[in-house]
Amino acid sequence: MSPRDEIDVPRLRAASGQTRRGEDGEGSVQVHMDASMKIEGAKVFSVYGKGGIGKSTTSSNISAAFATLGKRVLQIGCDPKHDSTFTLTGSLVPTVIDILKEVDFHAEELRPEDFMFEGFGGVMCVEAGGPPAGTGCGGYVVGQTVKLLKQHHMLEDTDVVIFDVLGDVVCGGFAAPLQHADRALVVTANDFDSIYAMNRIIAAVEAKSKNYGVRLAGCVANRSKATDEVDRYCDAVGFKRIAHMPDYDAIRRSRLKKKTLFEMPEEDDILAARAEYISLAEKLWNSVGDDPLTPSPLPDREIFELLGFD
Image (cartoon, rainbow, N blue to C red):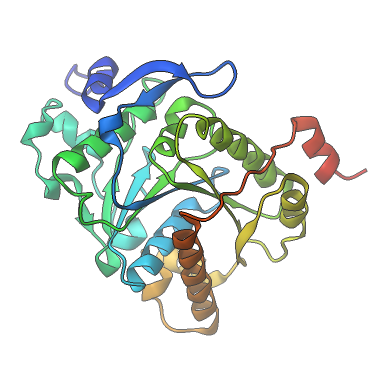
C-alpha cells in the first residue's frame, strides 16, 4: 500500500472538525462533535442493531417510505462495505473516503456529484465508508462526510437524514452518528443475541444523551414471526416496539433484485411490508418533539435471567 492509499487519521480528524475532550458516560472519553457540524433543519435518525439483522434493508425501505410521503431524504451508509444504499441506487456507489483519497484529502476539489447519488424516489445516497480494518476510527469518517455535506449546502433542502450504522455499538466511532441524531432506532429479532445487542445499544444511546440531543425512538422486530421475547424485554426496561416485520420472502427477493420493496410487484406480502414501513416512517417523524423513551438497560446477568431458559 502506497502512502497515497493509506488513511491519515490525524489529518482526517482535523479535517472533520472533531476534538477529543470530555466524557459520554462513566469511564468513557469520546470524540466530541464540533458545534458547527450540527445538522440543522432536518430530522435525523440513526439505525442500529446486531450485525446482519437487516439494518440496511430497514434503512433503505424507511427512506423509500419517507420519499413516498413526500419528504426529501438523505441516507448515509456508515460501513466500509458501502452496501447501505444499493437497493436505492441499484449499485455499490463509491465511498466518501475513497473519493477523498483520490484527491489527496483536498475536499475543496470535490463536487456534490462526486460523492452523492440519487436513488429511488429522489432519495440522495452517500456511503461514508471507513478506514481499512485495524487502521482507524469510523467516527472521523462520519464527521468528514457531514462536513462535506454542509460545505456543499446539501443538508439545507433535506427533511430527513438517516444514518445506517454497522453492527453493535462497541466504541465511540460507531456511536458518532448519535451525536447528530434526534432519535435512534434499534433493529432486532425475537432472539437472545439480538436483544442482548439491543440492550447494549440502549445503554450507548443513554450515555450519548448526556451531552447530545439524541433519544430513543423504539425498536423494530425484524425477520421474526413472533415478538414475544422482544415485547418481554421492552416491558422489563421501559422500551417500545414500534414496528414488526415478519420474515417475508419478498424482502429477500428485493435484495437480490437490488430494489426497495416500493419498486417490487404489488403482491400481498409486499403491500403489507410497504404499509408497515410507511407506518414506521410516520411514527419516526412524529417521535421528534414527543416525549422520548427513557428505558433502563439491564446488567448482562439480568438479561440472561430474563430471556434464558432453565
